[in-house]
Amino acid sequence: MAEQKNFASALGHAAGTAALLAAGALAAGGALIGYGMYETQKFGVRRETLKVLPRGSADIRILHLSDIHMIPGQHLKTGWIRNLARLNPDYIINTGDNLSHLDGVPDLLHALEPLMHVPGAFVPGSNCYFAPRPKNPLRYLIRHTGTPNPSERDALPFEKMHRAFGAAGWINMSNQAYSTVLKGIRLDLTGVDDPHIARDHFAGWTRGSSTSNEAPHVRIALTHAPYQRVLDQFTAANADVIFAGHTHGGQVCIPGYGALVSNCDLPTWRARGLTYWEHAGNSVPLNVSAGLGHSRFAPIRIACPPEAVLVTLTARD
Image (cartoon, rainbow, N blue to C red; front, top):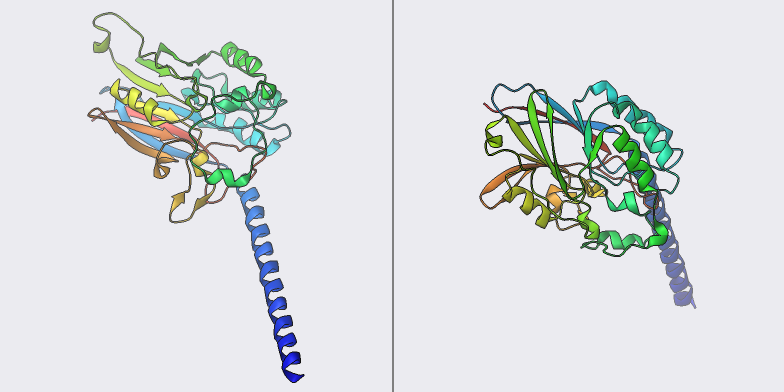
């Protein structure tokens, strides 16, 4: 009888311990999610400098925006983006995924309005065309190879957004090339539509005169998703700098280790920041923005705060 009582007591103690552990794990998980939601509001500006301009050139300050994923009512993010105009950029590059909601366009345009007085260029991401949908969170940990056939029922009003961008003078670089002059330097731009949904086609560079390469110029390439095949094309074509987004910097990172995934075939250690992509004997600066937003169905960031990037192009030594 005594043995039965001891066994029952031990069993009760074990059950109590298990309950405490479960409660502790639940509390820790809740705290982590709470912090992850808080970090989505920790906006910051990363600054980079690249020596890619011809000797004697004046600096060109490029503000790189990506993955805004605008949702109606995001007043803090809207105000922060509006205040980026104080950086006085010379050029805006937007690498897509601007929306996360069917009704996000008015808030997006209000956020960008002070910056739309600055010349710029953009490429779309899949979340310019299609709204995100709820997914199993465990899918986050699976390597992605793209989503070729998103549902048309999730279509977003990207035409309205693109018309507003165009009216502001921002150039749609989807599968095309374009040249403009800024501070006496010819900017040769090329871009692709979103590789994540298999819409990319590399158009090369604009064709000028036989002596056009002798004029002061810089070659800038844009893509939303930095898939390796696209980076290889840009690098083989002698781009001077590549701008990309899409990865959210990993969105959920481990301090001291970094991103767990990049949401494409880009190595995870390149998921955020400035690195150099090497291919065909060339090495090109690759700036991948961690972005300013998130899917409305995954409103957390951990060890990966949102960012805009101010890239100063300066003269070579």
